[in-house]
Length: 201
Ligand code: ATP
Image 1 (cartoon, rainbow, N blue to C red):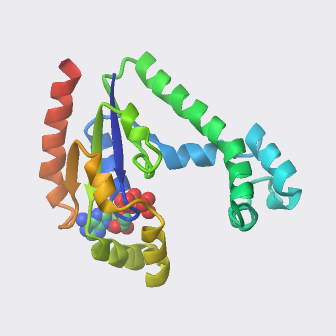
Image 2 (cartoon, protein in one colour):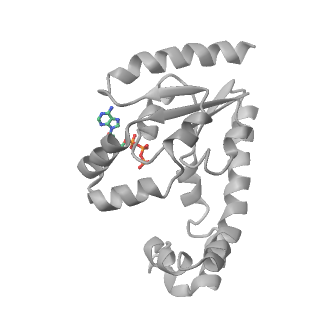
């Protein structure tokens, strides 16, 4: 089974591209979704987080109060490591499980939509790395326009990630999303031809 890593900086259009690939019949494993699923009510990681960071990080309905957890976990490296030691093994296991499910279902290729693919060195595990690329200024304006972020917040989030140059250096395929959404169609069609070719190799 072909593993296709899909990544890009914040606001680059990963979700948009993932949706297009899905519409071409490719299954998508969404890393953000997995990170949320492992801390759902009833999951062992959620109980461990409450033990570690205080039971008031749980909302009345038992769900995780993410912003309160963030204020306690991201104060220093020690607490961030504690958070990661609880969530990362679960995320890793659940990701591996979803790949295995796709393989068992006979899928020839699967897309792994992972914002931090290159940041975390996971690009090495992929057969094909697809990077969605957009100029930083365009990303800032899209995040302000469509996501309601302040310009300052958008820039801060961009700066917290690896540079575009580092990400692009890991790319086998670059999708240019600087233009109109329609400009993606041709690029995705070409990518699908490449993927179908790799599947039969
Ligand atoms: P995040 O990093 O926050 O998860 P993302 O990389 O998944 O974001 P999208 O959610 O796909 O990015 O796109 C960010 C925003 O920009 C969305 O509101 C989307 O509709 C819009 N957008 C994506 N591509 C284009 C484009 N070519 N032209 C204009 N707007 C676009």
